[in-house]
Length: 222
Image 1 (cartoon, rainbow, N blue to C red):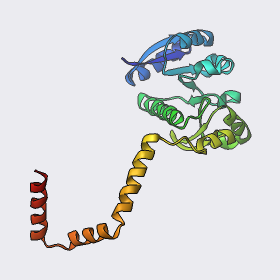
Image 2: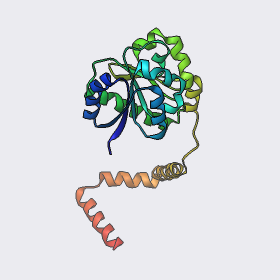
Image 3: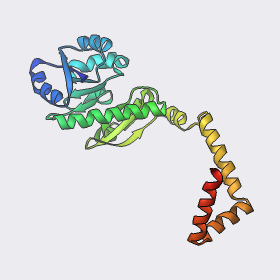
């Protein structure tokens, strides 16, 4: 089943964007307002929400948490508070670039889940991070900020709380602890004088003696 994408834009802009999304493998639906988008996102599992900033932006600011499960992209140039709430795509864009952005978003979500990081991540180019540093740092209180350059993630900004959660000692895995104990026990036995002597003798033995020892071991096992 194809992944679903929701377009939140005018009919004219939809005509420009739909072909690239369908080429990228998405099953596309479209609405004309942020309120309609919110109603659809709550009911349906959209992976991607692509909207015009002027149409989707105000709704996105009011209902951030309802869009958490989707990658949200806004068309146009980043501006105002919205620059810190969603990733922006400046025209023109094609299916290949869109695919790279969506794949990066999937990797970010997997990384956050693996690291148990709370909140909603946002991705922004290094130019915004540099020009809006104070606001970007404030934004880390609501989730990690991934800094990109040429569509590639270059750095991640975390709040102090998220960093402490990420670096604190986790509960040990019982299976891993058992394997570690078995390895330590085996290593200790290998360090014993008799084991060292046996290993040294095996490495120094000529080929005919090694062959005879292997045959004897097989016969003994049988």
